[in-house]
Image 1 (spheres, rainbow, N blue to C red):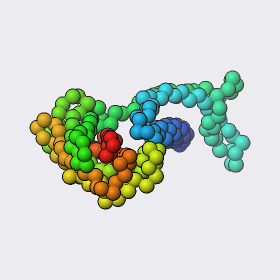
Image 2: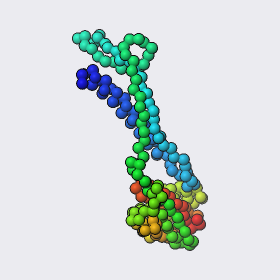
Image 3: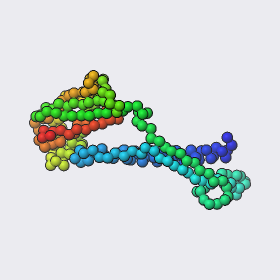
Image 4: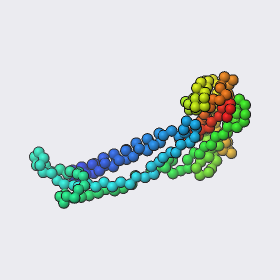
Length: 213
């Protein structure tokens, strides 16, 4: 490839890579939006499925440089008849997570009454298949619990040491479920809101519970 040809190729590469990086940053900003509002209600999530682009430019030569060398200049496209007007178009397409393979799909439910509740997590995938032997991590989202408790009129819910999980790492059985318990201590405020999260791969689901829930 000639030096001029390499310059053109490198410049186009920089433009396209720059657009791709900007697109990635835009999607990351959209993905950083909170999944739930202050009351635990799901919020809309936004994705960019694809982006079409078209770049117009003029190619011209410049012999005015030192030593009379020739250069290729990328200029904004115009109506000028000098040089050669060109364009590059294409589409950035979002690749589904998992390269299009089925992704984990979780659901979580807390049942029972009193200070000891049953936690049931159902593990499947987006193809509707129940997953046997999948490892699920269960956690207490303390920041969300304190925020929702404050909204419920409990600025000091006394979470520390008062919410206990029967197990934090669970394995689904042949029916696609994993089971454990959550217990509430005597010092936990009755109106306190406890947010539990279940995670598998990149999938996270939440459920609200507490003594009065």
